[in-house]
Picture: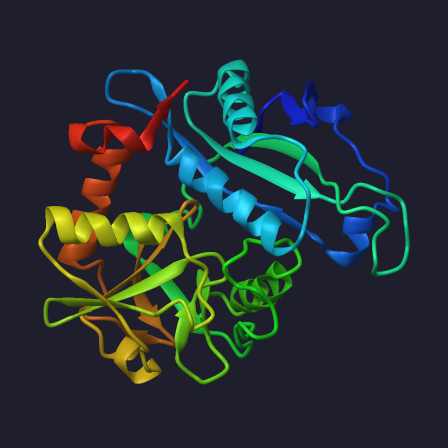
Length: 306
C-alpha cells in the first residue's frame, strides 16, 4: 500500500502534504502544459538510502522544460539538494520521487501570460509498479491507440499532456483484464508501453525500438543497455521491431524507473518464449537490484546518498 511523505517541496519551501494546493483554474490543469520526472530512492546493502541516477533525471527534467519553453526558477543543484532533503525528512528508506514543473497562473486561453514555472516535489513509499507481474511476468495487450508521432509532439520530453496517450492505452488494458499495454507507432512498429520502454531477446541478441519510433529516451533504458554490454557482453541493437517479431521473441521485458525491469510473458494471448520470465531477464533483474542497492562498486557514481 502506498504512503505519501508528510512534506512537499513547493517553490523553495517545505509545506505539509495537505497544504500543497493549486487553484482549480490553474492554467496547466486546463491545458496540460508541464513536465515531470520519476526517480527512485533505494535502501542500499549497507543500510543507507541512495537516489538512483538523480543527476540524469534532473538533467532530463530541465531538457523537457527547455523543449516546452518553460522557465524553471531554480538551478539543477538546488533541485538535487531539495530532493535529498525531502527524502531525508520523509523518514522513508525507499521512495518514488515526483518533481513536476507547471504554469501556476489563473488564466484561460492557450497562450499563457508567463512561462515561468512553479516546481513541486513529492514522494511516495511505493512498491513494484506492475505488482506481481514483476515476479511472474506481465500479460499485455497491443493497444488500439497508436503512440503520438514525433512530428506532433516532442517525445524526448517527459511532459504532462503527452500522457493522455498513455492513459488511453493503460486504461484500455486494465478494462480488458491485462497488466499493461504495448503501443505501436504510427508506422505500425513496436514503440513502448504507456510508461515503459521495451526490449526483446531473440537467439541471444537483444533489440529495442529506436528513439524515432516515438520512444522516450528512458534513463532505465540507457542503464539496461549499459548493463547488458558491460556486465553480460551482450550488444543491444536499436532498430525497428515488427509486431510479429515481438510475438516470436524468446524473451521480452519492460524497463522504466517505476517498472524497473518487468518481464513480459504474454502478448494478446500469445506466450512469449515458454510463457515464463526468461533467463536473461532474470539476470538483468538481479544485476539491476545489485546496482541500485550499491553492491557493485563500479556503478557507485550513479548513487546519490542522502
